[in-house]
Amino acid sequence: MNHPGKEALSWLRSLAKLLDESTCRYQGDPVSLDHGLQTLLQIWSRQIAHDRSVFWIGNGGSAALVSHLSQDLINNCGVRSLTFNDPSLITCMSNDYGYGQVFKRPLLALAREQDVLMAVSSSGMSTNIVDAARAALEIGMDLVTFSAFSADNRLHKLQSTLSFHTPTEIYGHAELTHEALIHAAIDTFSRGEGGR
Image (cartoon, rainbow, N blue to C red):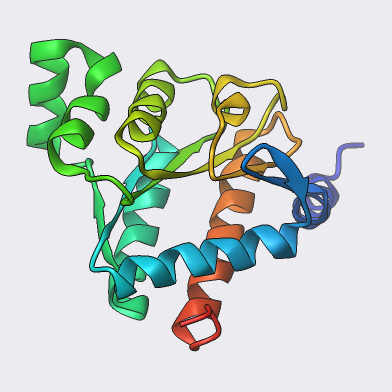
């Protein structure tokens, strides 16, 4: 006999376990998760100190996630934070240049050296995310990535400032783990524990 309630509880327990199993690299080298989160807080603190911006990109569920977290970073932490999720902008870029350029072109127009790009992708394989992330590195931005699925994914393999990875093939687990990690950083930062 099937027990959906038990299956759902098992799903939640797996999610909690994935938070402990998530990993981080700093400039390509493995670091502890707490070191990675502390570094993220310091990066955001520098953005305030030097009047710089944080940009966010994601597709689908990750697009909703970055919109939510970007406004939290503005509202709770006072960081200048922007997404590229305006429907007119997305449809314009897609129509004129193709969906692969939907984040890269606005980023090239708006971002400056030493701004930050927060790139979130469950698969880490989306061309529009990876191409924008590469552009961020060319501009001289700090690149912070969150991905899941294979640790060999294209986004995680970039020479990011920080790269967080969650070892799961389940979209819900990936999205919620990414959200939990970033929420933990935002909530810590907003309490004045982010190195400000």
